[in-house]
Amino acid sequence: MSGGEAGSGASPPRPAPHLVLIGLPGVGKTTVGRALARRLHRPFVDLDAEIEQLFEKSVSRIFAEDGEAAFRLGEAQVSARLATSTEPTVVAPGGGWVVNEAATAHLRGSARIIYLRVSPDEAVRRMGRGVTRRPLLASGDVVSALATLHDRRREAYEGLAHWTVETAGVPRGQVVVRVLALVTADERDSDDEE
Image (cartoon, rainbow, N blue to C red):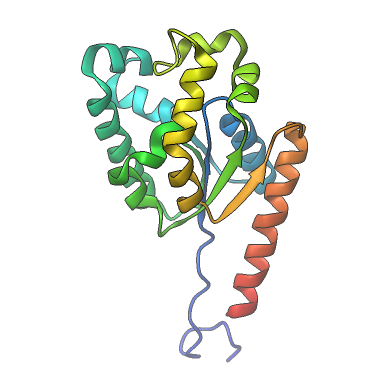
């Protein structure tokens, strides 16, 4: 029998982990995530889109009509469902996912979490007029609001992340290349351990 056949005592190969991209709104989680998924031949999941399907309404309507607590509960439910999937997936959660312990607990053990770091003012610039669609940023001084979110979430981003990729001044394609290099090196290291 060869080493990979049943009965050889060799453990089955470990499935590739999910990849979860975290960071401030506007950092490019969805854009980078879709590109990564294409390059890695994996499905891509926009967590907010999944939550919208669950509630059958937009994120802004969920926040306005049901409140943030209901949204965070939905976020935890969708994260739990993803955690049971054996197919490695690229996941882009909303920026606040990192502070929802009920959601992060489901994917921490089955994912590699990548923090796409950007400054608040750069994130606002990237969002452009789309910033008004963000429930937590829709009014007032957007840069100040995002800076406050950043200050509150920075520790969570850094604490959850397996890797941090700086995105300021880096074209999206180059961010994808940097993440791919980390994933490839991780998979090679995992193969060497088996």
